[in-house]
Picture (spheres, one colour):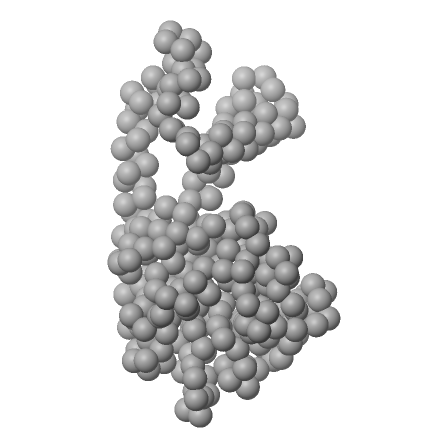
Length: 282
């Protein structure tokens, strides 16, 4: 992943200084953004103290007064259930030029944020996932109708501080993004947990099981992430006919594991739609 290409004059604001904002700010600083170009508002002094440990040059405050007038992009990094209240309390009446608004609040549609802010608001909806805390995440992103090409590029650079970025052109696809990558780490954690438990039942110690399973997962993910990776070919390369891997894969396929994943992701996507509908009504 390349360094961000933000202009040195670009100023970035964060409303909310929790874990995801902390990860993004740390990533921006690591990739060369000056701490003085970043402003954060959060009512929690504990959150601000934690951010202060990243760099003393950050602009930190317990309220949003003046933040929107002095930044080019503002990341809305608050819990989805309070996003509407936070947005409604923003003092936007006297702002000559609204910054790009990037929401990372899960399950809240860009169209609803635009409605709360005003029809001319430029809103990007993003769905980062938990590995962003390590700089290894991936964010699905959707640009609202008022977002310019330059603003989309700016959003990409900001989101890349926490990992890769995958843009979608239809906001409805963000519900699928939530099901696949937003919730996705938990699916892999469950698989790792199940494999570790099985390994212990086969006679390995818990320490041995964890080391073998986790490192195998890391290695498999690294191979799958290669630019020219063909996942089916990779699986076939490990699965010799009549061998041990073939015995395990045949058992999983006999119990319709692929269809089980289809049903699970469909359930997650449907729940994402329900939550977005609730957020729009609240």
